[in-house]
Length: 325
Ligand code: SF4
Image (tube, rainbow, N blue to C red):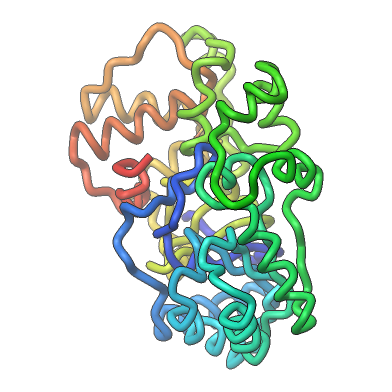
């Protein structure tokens, strides 16, 4: 059985759609996703299970949750009904128009238990979002006493060097701060190099022979991690740092059948070797000579199953993750 008895800290992905298509996004969010939000009934189910698993607080993220603020209110109201606290809500500030309309959204959020916003401040988001919106939102937060969790202040001066009325590409950053800027960016940001981030940085990662990856295979402990998990709008448990993999939370806490979730089960119990064997034997996957590490191999197989073989497996949901990478 795949089973989790306790969850410590995690987040709710209320929607995958986003105003931006940032190059570092592990969840592959973008404007292309369907405009779906978590419903009140899914939220009720998810929060009641989280409560059973002793998880009393969550953060809210996306996608961009505030693309349509009124559509996350039912989720926040459900959290309150189940006595689940909101640590913070993540936003990229793209929705900011002016102080007065921002303050009215902030007041609605505060009424529903959100007392802190994590606001993205980094060159990846600045490719899409002018910095004046971030500054304006921070100012509006201070006017209504909404807490701000700036992520990351270390980039403030870099962004502030440019004209804040428009977005700026990563190439502009490299032109101004030097070629090394982009190479050092993942470490400065503390980037998890999976999902779209892996696609972005693959060309500069060290390649590893396939045979060596298989030889070093061991169970992926991240999959059953109790910290920094997510539950998405469809009720999928998304393991810590590994988007594109999922188990219905409603099954996971009771004990999910490994036969129904063969990808998840193989990775969790054997590791990448188990997934390769399954993909080769049952789906005709042909391994390449080398990969940028085991996560690159893992993602390559999963993309092959979803996009080339069009296999509809419950542990590779939502499949748009692969389409909109
Ligand atoms: S091998 Fe796959 S499941 Fe394991 S950590 Fe990497 S991406 Fe996640």
